[in-house]
Image (cartoon, rainbow, N blue to C red):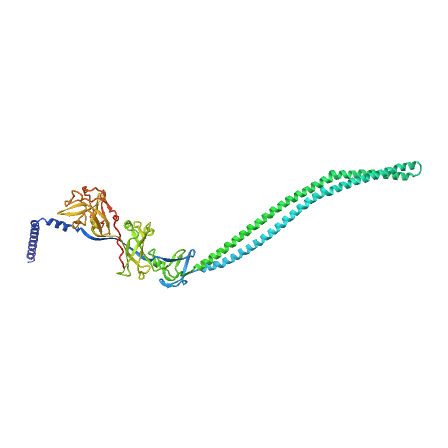
Length: 562
């Protein structure tokens, strides 16, 4: 019985399949018989198409960023090396000028100051001693030089005195002694002559005659002795005394020179020692002043009235940055507190290198904050960094973004420093222009082309493109409003693809092809819809579609008010 039921079920299923197949065949035949419009419908059903539209097109670049102050006082740690936070005001506190914001640990510096004060006192004592020693050395040097000069003067005077005074007097005395001796000799000889006459006449005794002879002989010896003394004085005593006195003058002269040099050297040495002690004293005082300055810098005070914002809160540099807190160590020149000085803010955003050629300074930008949904602020692109952000490149070598500043205008009292924001930079606006999705445009042998649905087939057509906003790209020429383009260009050639017989006039401005030239032959086309900017290169590999510059004469739209 069960076998019979299963057979009946199989027969009924076969009948249903046959009926369904007959119905499908009839529907297809009917569609073919009804007319020629069925082929485009099949093409439209087989792949997505987009109808070329003409209307308003906004070209903009969207960048994430952070709200920061345009004019801000940055308070850094000025203590050398590493220091520990003892106390810190709460983040975002409203403070007055002169209020204590941060106190760093300076206990080690206080101990160092005591030791340095002792070193300063020792250096000062050594400096005073060197200064007094210089005065003593200078005084002693002057005394030694004066004495040496006096000795030289006395030596010269002794020489002159002997040469011009003592020697002539001695010579005259010797000559006088000779004269007297000769007179005595003449008298003795005359007396002896008369004594001999008287002795012959027996008037004198022999003893008296002998006495007169002895006196005459003695007078003769006195003359010889006086003449000998004169010769000794002239030939020996004078020469020796002159040599001795002249040598004494020379010795005292050289002693004076030595005394002068030694005194000058002693003074120079004393001055050098004084300069060294003074320099050491000044150095020790400078070290003490630096330590005291460092101790004073351990307390950071508010320079102005305003809000104190932690640097770690205003600008997170790394994902592992921790908020400032008591007990945390900070390094020299590390940013601690941000204090905005005026009620003006800016948005710091990262501009991707792909949009670098689109964005220039002076363009308007629409800024929205995540914390104020629905609130729109308007500003202007103020600066674009000439080099990419080094930290972003370090984290991802393939990511190159350029720090860009957008000055926000109007009332910004609702914005808070450190909020996340989103900036839409308005590059250009077109009121009436043709545009298609960016994925519809591809590259064929280096030229911008689209695939246009023409009847039952597709035709590749060269177009001239303008700027794009990441979704839609402006078509300057090559398409007409209402035409349908393929959103997923085929990867390989198909029987549905046809080559146009000619390029419409006006095409080829961006790719250099002459007007009226024939479109190039199709290469293998990638069908990756997720990479709308890529197309086949000359060797079949994918390549990036080049960025389009803003067409000449186009102007950025005026910034809406409010």
